[in-house]
Every structure is written in structure tokens, then in C-alpha cells.
Image 1 (spheres, rainbow, N blue to C red):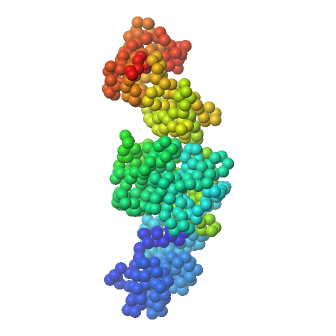
Image 2: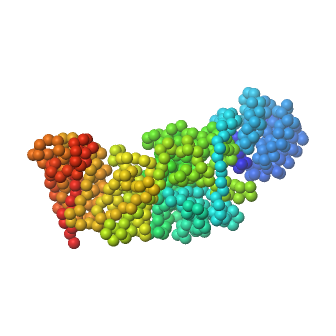
Image 3: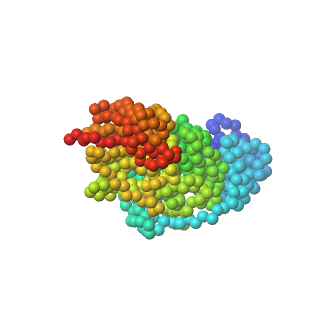
Length: 629
């Protein structure tokens, strides 16, 4: 715990005795001893420096700067009783602002150790100005002490469990990340914590964890590879690599993709993400298209900030700072983006909390606009550092912490339901196969929300078994599209496709003359041939299918509902088919592959006249008329 206290002390609680500054003593020998002690303190020699300060105070017991530095050094050594005794001995002899400084240093230390009542007592004893302390931290510490005392009374009932063997077979393992099918990826530091970092994984099979294994020889090396994030579909891995020959900064982010069961050679992410400064602690969205990470680049809001980048057309966009809704002027880190792509869990020491890094939750309401972060409360948050969390589809929070033997182990606890997003996430498993041969197929999987014309996620099924995994909220306007060259475009409503077990068998139909793709989203408004704004996503899926299969020629068939007379509906359906025809041409589908025709109301697929049935009949059908060899 002292490491966190010391890092804050160094950054925000400024040292004294700048060369040439007038000191509060007339003893030249005391000044000489003090300056030697100060230099030793700067390099972390807290024992010889303290011995020199004792000699200085023997020369002048009212030497304010020497008293304060001795008090701070004892705290850095973790010897609070000695620091408290030193304060009691000298409090009446030092100036008030120095005395107040020792009080806030002591309050901060006790707060950092979880001794909230003692911290409160010291904090309340401050009267007047405080010697050279950062006012932001001073205010934050005072308020956090009050916050910790009040909110510790509201402790939740949480059961923390160490992961069973064979996991936790190394002295140090940390920063877990989990897939939709419960494969746990984490960092291991071997050789009793003195070796290099490597990435390992273990699979939960419903009863036990499998023996941990190195994730891949193409990823792990004799350099440090760690703090990894794996996408929920298990196909994309971003990890931190430090001091690598091709690196940009000290630690950079690398990416690897799982192809045919093997991980590709890692690629260094571009300067859109990496800089000359430290980048680490990535978190991928479930389909691997959005990346949250931590950077110490100087154009942030604090020491460490959380940044975001999105993969667009194969390239990562320039990283964007999440802004003051998430980041503070202190350190913020350890992001975890929930599979819903809206809920962000992260750690911060710049907000009211219990000491160290606390965990918070926030919701993205619009692009880079976040709700007020919520502290997850006690005992999820304590005076220790809470970092490196990941949450499974069924609500288990995985993390690392030191055990009684000072070994870093992996733990988990069931996240209280009120801390999870209101809309539950369901794990869905699909198996794609050839409709005729039943052979498993690797295919592109796209989930789109047709109500908002937005892509929710993109993934791919595995060649060996045709399996893909999704973590999704219930959404009646979400549609699944599956595309593979040589096969008909597949479309289904997500809620209707998967059974109560969350599993679906999905047959892909090989391309044949006469097969058809029915586009039944509401492509047209009533009595109009103009494409509805919501039709774009639907039509773009069809465009991708046609461009992937240029040997296919189609007829675009337009259909209407039964309202209106036959002649009018024939003309309307023909105009609607023409609108789609021209849309495809604009998207570079070859003209010679397309014809269009209107069928009016003559071929209904839904019987009845209510609004939902009429909407189904207002449709476009793509009929395969020929396939060139």
C-alpha cells in the first residue's frame, strides 16, 4: 500500500529546501546535514537520510524543514508510530503551517492504510494554512476521508473467491480478461516474480479450469508481454509489449488475430494509438472494433488518462481522450468496456473513494458523453488498489490481488446486480454449416440494429466447427446477417433465432438459380418508391453479398401490400425495384448483373391487412437468375 502513498507524495506533496531557499535555522551545520539528508531522500535512502536529520535536529530542535522531512521519511518507511511520536515531540516548536503539513501528511497516510478514524482525527486538527501542498489533493483527501467513513457503513455482502487450481500456479498472475465462452487470459510473471511477463490462458469447462498454457509462441517472447485484453468472441487480442525492438515508446500496444485456430504474428499498433510515451492496460469491445487504453502522454488531463480508438475500414482512428467525464487531473486507469459497448468500469485515484485506486462505473449516453461515475462501494473498493478487472457474461468480476503469502493471485466475485447494466447481456452461441453437406463453415457474422441503422458487432465463425459467440442485450430490432462467398446471404431476427438455451443451428444455402433473398425491413414508406432512411443497413448487406459473388446475376423484384388497385401497385412496385437497382449501381454492383421488375400485390408473403402484415408485403426480393461459370 505504501507504494501508492509514496507515488502520490512525490507527485503532489512538493519537497522543500530548493537550493538557495531561506531555511528556518541559523545553524550552518544543521543546514549542511539537512541538505545531505534531502539528497539521500530523493534517491530513496530513507535510513541514512533520517540519521542525518536526527543530527540536524540535535543542533536545532526548532528547524522546521528538518522536522517535516524527518516526519515524511518515517511515513515513507511505514513507521507511523515513530512519525506520530516525532510530531508530538516537535508540534509546539514548529510554525503552524509546518504543523498543519505534518497533520495532513499523517491523515493521508492513515487514510491510505484504511485507518479512517485516525485520518479523520488528524484532518480535523488542521487549523489554518498548510505548508506547500497541492490544494487539489488536499481538498480531495479531506473529502475522501469523510466519504470513506460514511460509506464504509453501507458495506455490501460480497464473497471473494480465489480461483481454484490449476489456475494460480505461478507466484505472480494478474490483469485477467475473459471471452464469451469463459476463456480467461491473463499475465504471468515467472521466476518468483522476477522474470519477464508472458500471456497465459485457462478455459472454464463448467466445472474446473484447464491447466494454464502459454497463449502462443508467436506472441510470447523473452521480452515483456502483458496486460492483455481479448475480445469476447476470442478472435482479437491486444496486449502491452515493452522495450521491443520495433517499439515506439517504452511500452506499446500490439494486436494479434486468431486465424484458423492460431494467433497471428503481433502487429504494433500505429501512431494513431501508440506514442513516445507509455501505453498499456487495453480493453477491447466484444467484437474487437473499439479499443480503450491508458496512456501517460502529456496532452491528457492528468498523469495517466484513459483513451479510445475505433477500427474503421481496417485502420485505427486517432486516439481520443475520454474527457473530464471520466478522466481527472490525477491518475485514471484500468478501463473495462462492457459487452454492451456503453458501460465502462475503470479505476481512479482522482475521485472520492476509500484510498488507492477505486473502481467506478459510468454509462456512455452519446459519443464521449458519460454519466457521473459511480463508486462501486465497500468492500469491492478498499484502501488498497483495485485495478485490472474484467466481467463475464454471467456477472462474475475477475481480478488480481495479493494473498496472505504476498503472492499475486486471481480472484473473482459475483458483481451485485445493481452495479451491472440494467439491460442484461445474454451469451448466444451459433453453429454455421452448409445446408446440404452439413459441413461446418467459417463465415462473416454481422449484427445490426435496423431501427437505428447501426452495426452492433462484427465477428466470424470458426472454420473447424462453425461456431461463433455473441454477448447481446435483448433487442427486437437486432438482425443477424451471415455472409460467405458461394452461399446465399442469411438474415434472421436475433431474438427469434436463438432458443431458450441461447444456441442456434444456422444452415447456409449454397448459391443456386432460383434462390432468393427477401428484404422485409420497412424499406419504403406507404405509397412511396423512395427508400426509407432505415433501409441503408439492409441494402448494404445485400451489396456486400453481390460484390463478393460477382458471378451471380439477379432480378430485383418489387412487391407492395394490397392497398390500392392492381395497376397502381404494379407501377409502384416497379418504381421501388428501380430505386433499389439504382442504389446498387451507385455501390458499384455491375449493371450487367442486375434487372428489376415490379410484381405489385400478386405475391404476398403475409395474409391480412393489418399494419405489420402490410409492412411484410412491402418488400424487395433478390432472385438468382443465373450463375456464370
